[in-house]
Picture 1 (cartoon, rainbow, N blue to C red):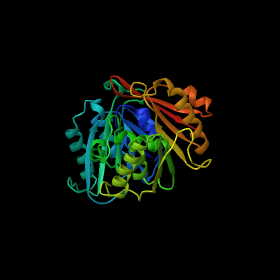
Picture 2: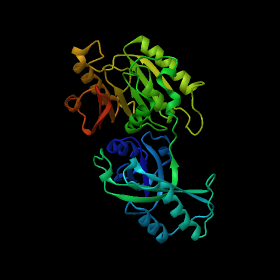
Picture 3: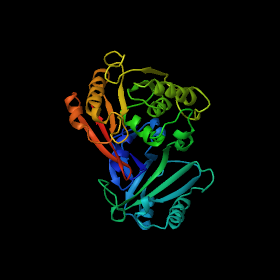
Picture 4: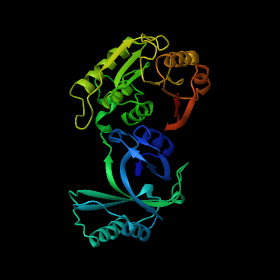
Length: 343
């Protein structure tokens, strides 16, 4: 069993993304979830900071955490360090005091402490819904102890849309784009299609996690710009390197999103950010455009993630999709993204 440290304030969405890299994800407390199994893909989650092998849970206070650790079987060798986290400042815990107390339990049990380069890091998470104003469906108060197993790579700031060769206002941030392609099922061996690719932000993140990225756009300018961006990030000097899998290849084509030059079931998933009414030049035609793209997505793939500025669930159902999840993601005061997860 694992405990997941979630990011952001939208726990249901973070858990949905985590389920792309973990099994049986369930709420534990604000900012925390449990999972029965975790894969290496957790390294590339946007809204999960780390996964830890669960030692035990207790009440959200230091005394309870000490008791859990004292009673636990600790089947590992080497040096250790303790990191305490007051999740979203919800429990009011003195984290330094918690680290000293739990470190004392470990030294009493024969472990040597190394704060700089430990062989094992024990995370102590303290969380309480009573201290979190935006808990949603987050579980109850608890302390969770766990040995760090997987830490996600936090390099999204190095890929700001404004730093790409081709930029247009309104481009989605890499953090959000990564989460959406993960929810869609991007991974090595998968083919992910974005039929309204714009500057290619979703395709970049799908390619970085190892998927084959296929994009289309009705505007030649966007296809040319997206090609520049994909060459730069996936094949060129903009690639972040490190622990990323090899890109699965990519293709771009100028095409109508409702008439893609792809065979039936050519892809594993479709993900696209539909035009927003307040920005689009074709505001009056948004419904037919989205409807056509949804029908075409249904033809080429068994899964789809649609992002829009409104609830298009009725169009998704008319196109033959089942809406398995829907999230409202606030971007700023005047924009809420509606994320539809379709199967």
